[in-house]
Length: 342
Image (cartoon, rainbow, N blue to C red; front, side):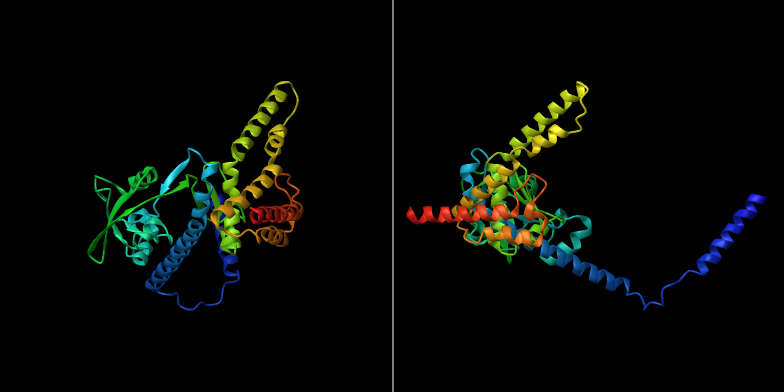
């Protein structure tokens, strides 16, 4: 009985305390559910359009570099036609209505914006075209599902015939592919101002994409990561890591504490020089892809100005932005002199 009275007493005390808490001033009437839903849809549409615009920019900048990098990726190439599809149910459920209304999507495959001068654009395909047949096989059927199309196109060594509907009229064209390194360049959501090479792909954060204000700066970032792939830096770093881990294991077996020290040293061994090597190779890729290189060193000066901790870069895995600027400036001068004399 005493416990029950004590519990009731606590409840009363809590209620009285809450009555004494500060409360917000009366708020205006809440917007209607319909108004909130309309605004939600509008914001989702804007978010989708912005995301796709960023993906489009990254692809437009990357394709010439992936073609120029072919000498670095023997045996790891793909055919590229400039065809990118989407349909309503390819989006997460909470985004389908926004995608449907923004792009007039249904269950059929429609073309996303083809890159300028891509095989698809040269053949006359446009955003929103409904793709009906590829190589004589019906799309959206048991003959050829959309999920199979990307792999078919990647592996197709020669031309493909594409048929599509636009405003109720049938069209067809033969597309001749462009050969690219099979290293997808992907846009990742969020993250710091950074980019990553994985040996078989490249990832650019949205923050880096926004930071690289010009396409020439973005091309430098992408070219640097592609150079890491082509120069086998990722595999070399992994081998160093594994060797260091084995040394840590052997030391531990012999009673010597080694909390990942050798593995850490293995990762760092050579990493600064690999960054500089990738910087130089990136300049050659930029030239081969038709990008100007005279302003490339300024990227490192701007990065150091905006992120002063990178000026000296004490982590030991990357050179300082000061060194990178000076080295790249000298490399640009050498490449331009060699080009003039050639």
